[in-house]
Image (cartoon, rainbow, N blue to C red; front, side):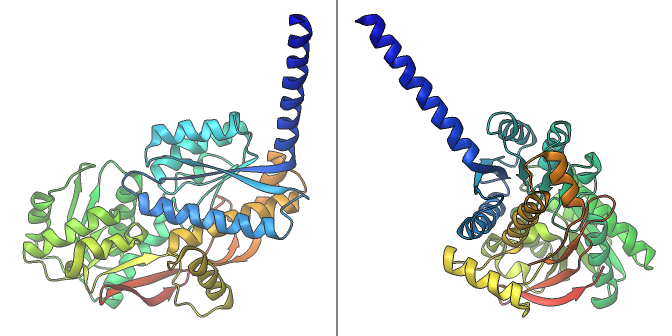
Length: 375
């Protein structure tokens, strides 16, 4: 009796495992990574929403390769070590055929070698540091890169704001913030401007007055702050407390509603470069804004748009590849020519998209579209 019971139990268990395998084969498994906790948590929330919206739309239309898309999401916590862990899990345990993400350059730089070594295509959403795609030919990105973004910021400060002297403040422990300030500095000087202060601060700093006092002593016309929104808000308030009345300029790391919530009037009349503006009247942008707003009861920021685009670019490549094989998807990705929310996407030789940037002004406590700058 005991033996027959064990045999029956083994048959049931084997059948269950068989069905589990069948269930896995029914879906095209794609990994999604973003920081839902940590210093860029609002970025992660928007990014996950963008992924989910795109995947839901594909599944509503029948999925891809005749199967539904299964998005397996992981929180990288804004930490490179955690990023390496979740990228490895998505590939080795969840058997993802491709990975979407992530947001922060320092975390993408931890995940990219893992994807490259496994020959699993990856598309970073908002990681703008040039080193990310330099890891290898399986690594792509949906956003423009820091040399372009820093150049746009410098040109805007010099040409539009008529600044002749600039100072830079950045997080020395972050490849994104440090790189962006370096590119801004190089272009601003090339245009004929003078960078009178170039100061780094440690990650996790909350009192920036020592660095600000030093860079503001040379009386810059503009303060370039390449940090993420939480630090930018504090820096703006402390700069005003120290008497700085000029504009702050920064990058896409500013793009969070928390910026104005924390900084208040200190950030009024300041500007940052970004990937898209929800005020853009093109049909594809307005359709996206409508769908996102209806689903999430909030306006989509650039992080949401880039994540939505990244998912659509990757799923389009899987469809064109006709396979979930990594090499086939990589080949299709390289041939991408697709109109998405943030622009027409074709990849250059380094797998970076060539696309426009917009300038956003903080006005009346809101993000207001200022202008578009072509590549």
